[in-house]
Length: 208
Image (tube, rainbow, N blue to C red; front, side):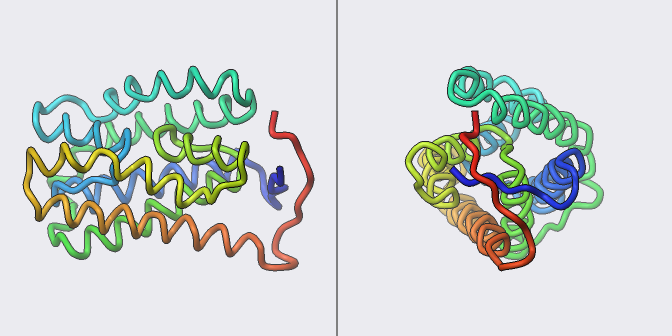
């Protein structure tokens, strides 16, 4: 498959993606009780319902997927594990900001939050990393079968919404779907940006 050879170090690119994803969650999604779906959505759902630390839930629920990633691609596992642990820490640490700095406007939260989170995931995908959940599943399917990374992520993430609807009703579910769609648009935009000639160079790699 094609792996991006970044003009700057992955050690800078990956944390940038993680920070954008965490920022989109804490500032836009949490205050409006909406979610990006997938593992993030399930963690957020349990946080809304039981008050458990969302960062710790995000970490624990990702463990089975990372067990699969270990056998699938060691580089993907290592880079994604670091991203996921950093994201778990940042979301848990910045969680109180949702109450003091959060944007409490559900339409803006779903659109802006989704785009910011999607760009963050897309940036990590460029560096052959993910946050676990739908982005890790999408990355593995894209590497194995050449399926669209953004499409795989959207399908995986949307699977949590029947539970969301049952607990919170149609409004939160609808705007959560909008957030997930906008997140996929953000991922797709980064995928297209990296293909602009002259911006980045490609090298062929097995990804293993």
